[in-house]
Image 1 (cartoon, rainbow, N blue to C red):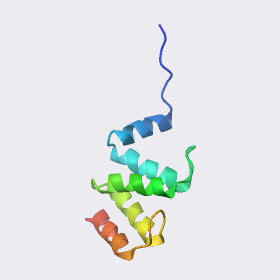
Image 2 (image 1 turned 30 degrees about the vertical axis):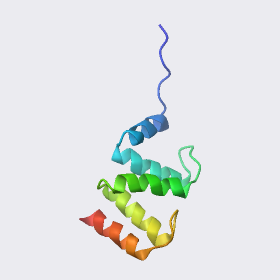
Image 3 (image 1 turned 180 degrees about the horizontal axis):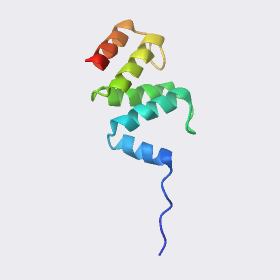
Length: 91
């Protein structure tokens, strides 16, 4: 019998993120933002993953997305959007 190779940690994270796991989506956002876990630094992908999780109420993703808008990371700097996501994160 041939067994499939064990899934790597990041393959597991990506699979979970793709199927709606909010923690995995937020984690991928951070990995892309920082270029860690073998992923290239890609701030546009970071914002995409943060947004997916933030829209479903993930507090850390909302805060991180607010930081992106505050600092202009992957998006145009926008203090109103930063404030919106910060407010969502604490509500």
